[in-house]
Length: 258
Image 1: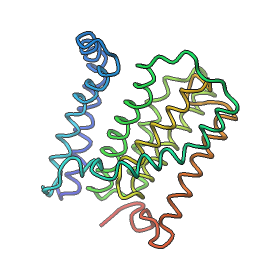
Image 2: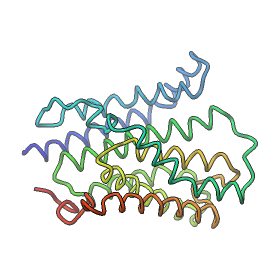
Image 3: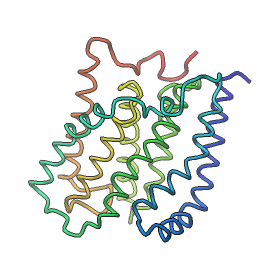
């Protein structure tokens, strides 16, 4: 078995270990930690940090072994300022549009807000963008399309619990599936700077929660109009940034790489 096929096997095995442990033990571990430190947000962060250990082990086992550290493999050693600037500016259409149309959410619990915006946005990007998409794309023969399809499919399925009927389920699946593709594409095009999709994810979640928009990711016509406006801004900025050098994702790395 060559190195790239071995890497793919390693990445899927350790993602499977993470998923099983997360499914069976995350809630109980979070409850125990939260009861000890008496803070739901910190309990959520600490539990997620522990649950990611299998993914860190899988990343370290990739071959050929190199001096590149985990921060580099996960894209966390890139420019934080670049990521925050991108996230803030591209979500301005959502913030301004929602501020004009929707009332402020007067029932925000600080812990719930931080968990569902900051913590969830940060850790979901580490799991699905940096590990499950990024490492598969960078360390195996799989190109962008097969790598992103698998990642986005799982990412979308994990959000289906928010649905209450078939129509809403279909809409949530479509939005989260396409959102995963967008975040992964941005991650690759911004030279694997994970702070770019992290910031965009956090700011989009935050704006959604700040205003009384909707109870699920499906939203309504106005919420989705401004959400897609934000997405268009993110894509346009990224394309214009590469107008001289060309985009990173192109024909030679769409399906299989040498």
